[in-house]
Image (cartoon, rainbow, N blue to C red; front, side, top):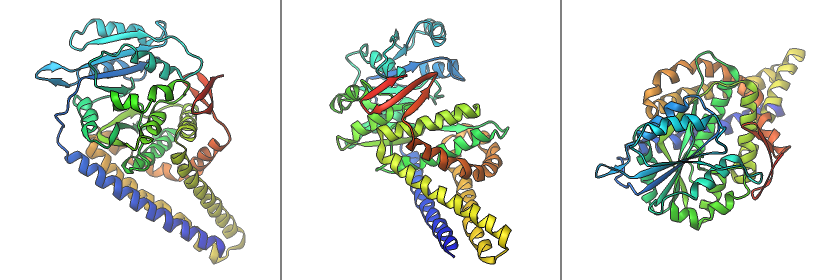
Length: 402
């Protein structure tokens, strides 16, 4: 009887939570897409730290160099590319691309190594030293971001709103149609996380595409937050929110990413996201832990009902099992609605999103089997792997390269 009541209550709670979260996200995205392109085009410095060659690296760099961000026909942004060493595979490719273009002012710097912070952050901090004095806004992007040609204008435009401290895009993983289970589960996890971006309380900056006024960057002391850190975006988030300012999600800056990867890499990626959130944005991490704890208990209760039904054949366990599993068709409904929502944003990826629908339908039950435990694992460690380097995150201001 207790299992039946528990499973019924969890089903109702999860359903209500998904209705509220999805409705909020849907309204938010719809309203944002109606906003006209802003004419706020201040002098901008784009900082792009590089390590290795991500899928589509050359294409992404070329699209960044083709951005429509100009005033009176004159380009109004510069790009600073930063690598740790000139032996990095990205360095010769960048040199080749940049030597053949004269449209965008740029700098290519070698940042060196700093064992007290993440390499990405070291690349960014070194790049900040060579930003031109005229730049009023800073944008930080990743080399695996495929950008529409008005990407920068959308990302920067909302910064003219007085209560907005930073703007952000977000990543949208699209697995190939081969239904690789681990890739599908990561994409599900990432999509559910995207629902938080419509919440003023929980919205966070994403390091693949985030922008901030230079004056706010200084006022929030972001560089000081980064000095001994392993994370750029969540530490920027907490610094900006400490000023009483918001992080604003820009749906037009949602970027599609190649979603396939080996299972070990995806487990490493998920673990890294959770531990970084634990250290740099504990408010959001506690929310994830609470949800994972409830879903872990739900899973245990469902399995208990299934075993009890097989061994005892009592009807009460069948009712409990049906109550618990009724979550799945509800989630399929929101998956279908979500597909339509993201297709409105990623109009050039409609077919690719369509192709993965049935794969996601099959992956949802498996996501319930593994994601709660992957989330709860972050309770046990503060150690992460990032691009071949192991970091121990002892606090937001202390990072050890292991």
